[in-house]
Each structure stands twice: as structure tokens, then as C-alpha cells.
Image (tube, rainbow, N blue to C red; front, side, top):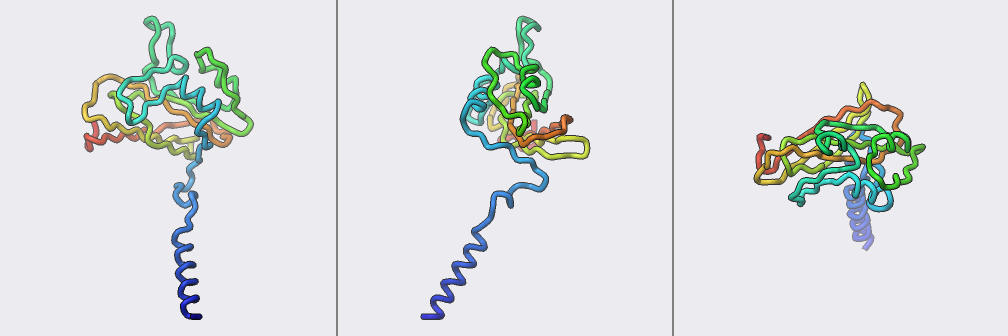
Length: 187
């Protein structure tokens, strides 16, 4: 009986060692994790004002509140890669063109990173984002994926945003990584 209890105890201890891994083990070194938001005032605001394409969407979305020129040609989306590091309500207000009340973001604790990338065809969505501190400022690795079998040739504004722990660095570089499900060699 004593051997049986000892074996069971060893098996239990071994299973705990191999099954207990924290989320931090899967986070690459140097990556700054975003603040986890799934709902609430901030999420609702950005979901309505900055449309995000998901892998199941089959239409083109444009924001009329960010990255939009209301004067050019009667109004059109800006076709330029843009990214902002926002550390105050005033900085957010300076780039916001919409009419809704800005959400309450505690800029004493958080930094908002918001931007767009111009994609060569429709169907892209953000699959993953990694924020790092680089030698010359922040680096955002943006992984964009396209699961469409046919690639309509029209430029797409791919929007992204996230809240991060407060960052003092204002310089940011975006590294765009495109992945095509049906075109492994790229487009």
C-alpha cells in the first residue's frame, strides 16, 4: 500500500510539473502585452468608429472618424500608412473626426496605439500584434492575414488599435507581415 501511495504521489507531482505553465512562458521576451479589453465603453467606441475586418467578413469597411479626409473629392479614406502613439485625451481628440463622445481612457496609466496600413487587395484582417521596445523607439509587428481565394484588386485600409501600459516613447515603427492562405508565395 505504501508503494502504491508513493507511485501515485510521484505521478501527481510529475503531472503538475508538466501541466503547470504560465501565460508568461508563451509571451516572447521583450513583448509589451496590451491591456485585455473585451467589452465596455472603450471597445464599443473603437468598434463603431474604427471598423475592423474579421476573417469571415466579405466586404470593405471604411472609417469616417479616423484616417479620413472630408474635404478631398467630397470625402475619402486616406490611403497612407499611419500610426499614432496617444498619451492624452487631447492627442486622441486631435486625430478624431467623428461626433461621438470620446471614451474615458486613463492616460496616466495607459497608452493608445492606433493606426492603419494600406493593403494591396481586399480581405485582410489583423491576425496578431506584437509591441516591442526597439533601439529607436517602439516597434509594432503587425501580422495581417488574407483567407480569400480570390483577391479583388482594390486597396484596403486595415485598421488596428490597442491599449498598452503607459509608454513614454513616442516614436513607433510598424513592421507589416502579410500572409495569404491560398497564395503561399505572397501576392
